[in-house]
Each structure stands twice: as C-alpha cells, then as structure tokens.
View 1 (spheres, rainbow, N blue to C red):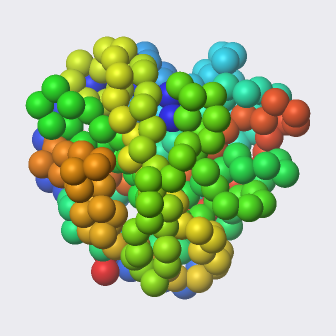
View 2 (spheres, rainbow, N blue to C red; view 1 turned 90 degrees about the vertical axis):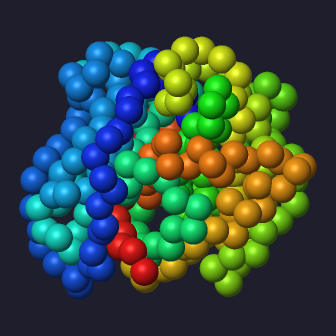
Length: 269
C-alpha cells in the first residue's frame, strides 16, 4: 500500500473483540469517508466501541469526495462495513479495519466475511491480517492475505521490479498452504517519523481464498515464525510497537469505475 506520511504513538491498551452474533440487521454508528479531517495526511486511527481502528486512503483526486468509506457497526456482534466507488484509476488505494493498537506474534483470531463484492474482473480487493513491526530504525509492513475478490491466486506486485513478486517459499497454517513473498518498498511509512525511506513488506498469501459467509480461523504465529528466519529477517520484537488489524484493501481499476463492498466481523479465539 502507499503508506501515510504520519507517525502515531498508540498508548491505549489493546482491547479484545468478541465473537459475533448471527448476521442480522444492524446500524452503522460511525462512518469515516474523509480521513484527512483526522490528520491532514489521509490517515486516521482511534477507537470505536472499545475497538481500535486504522484507516488510510490515497487518492489521485480530492480525498474529500468520499470515493471510499468505512463504517463501524454499533452492534457488538457486527464490526465494520466498507464501500467504495472509485473513478477509473491505477493509483487509488484505501486500507483499514479493526483490531489492536499493538501487534502480537501469536495472535489467533476468528472472522467472517459476510460480503465481498467487486465489479472489477481483476484482483482489486483483498482481506488480510495487516500491520507494522517497528524495531529501532527498521520499519516493516506485513500482510497475511486470506481472501480476495478476483480470479486466480493473489500475488503482490513488486514496484521496484515492475513485475509480480517472486515466492520465497511457503508456510502451512490454518489448514492451508500460503506462499511467502518479500518486497522492497520506498515511501512514507507508519513507523518512526513517517518520512520517505526504504522498507520491506512481508507477505503470506493463501493459495485459494477462504469462503465468504463462513466462520474462519487465522493464526498469525506460523507466519511470523516463517518470516523470522535468517533468509527473510522479520523483526518480531517490533510487533508491539505497531498496530495489527483485520483489514480490507481496495485499489482503483484503470479500466472501470470500481465499485464494491465488504462486511466483516472478527473475534479472538
């Protein structure tokens, strides 16, 4: 993702998310469609209903047009819904969701993606456990991608190489095989002062997306352990210095006006 030129120090304690009730009608209690109002940098974070949220939006146009919005339910058993209506674009990017202000190496969660729609015929929306590890002067961004909308297997893009990233092997977790990728990036980031500099992205991508509408399990430990090997160099000691959320990331499509939505609940297990 394009990362925000903003650094936040999150001091409030991590809060647990409760298991969801059956999907039923629920109202949105808070909507963010202009995160620039929070920070002036297109990045917002805070708490709603005792749950930590983070939201970042990068727009080629005016960020206040609300092309993408995320809403948090006021029902403890429902968590968030995001909707997007992006003009034709290759550079639009929004990522956010609910989770914890401090990452944990062995966090185990459950989740249910009740809806994930997209009118794009390529991969432009994904759901992942997402966060940052901030260790000294080292900034690392990470994804465990469990489901997405679009055909085929999801493969992250390596901007420096101008091509899909190359696999660094696999990890087995949650009764599934994930391909592992390491991508070098340049740009602003969450850790430190948020200035533009190089950093690494760590990816684990499930070989097939999880089914929508069913309860799923995600165990972060096997992924952190795999990335922590000498060939990759993930800094697990920095996890507690960064946030960790179950996120939706959506991208613009240069060929169509990209429209879609996600409805998602999560809980500790």
